[in-house]
Image 1 (tube, rainbow, N blue to C red):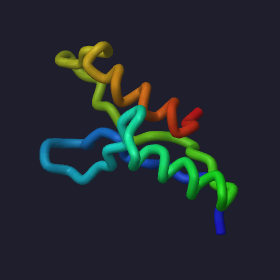
Image 2 (image 1 turned 180 degrees about the vertical axis):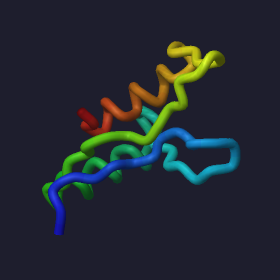
Image 3 (image 1 turned 180 degrees about the horizontal axis):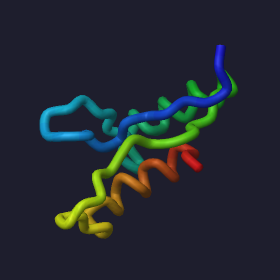
Image 4 (image 1 turned 30 degrees about the vertical axis):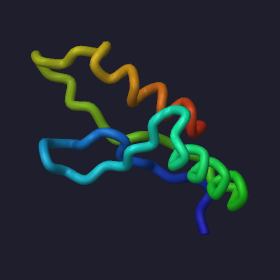
Length: 72
């Protein structure tokens, strides 16, 4: 087993796979319940490209979703 995981809550590039766990959603609550039951913490979320087009405000929902599931 393992004690923590990393989740991709934002696509790394267009078309890349990622997990949608919006705040208040059934999927987020279900994830939290299972992770807590297994003693698994969210270590990080992957990842944002920070380049000349980066707008921090456009990622607010993703960061809120990460905080909601316990990412540190």
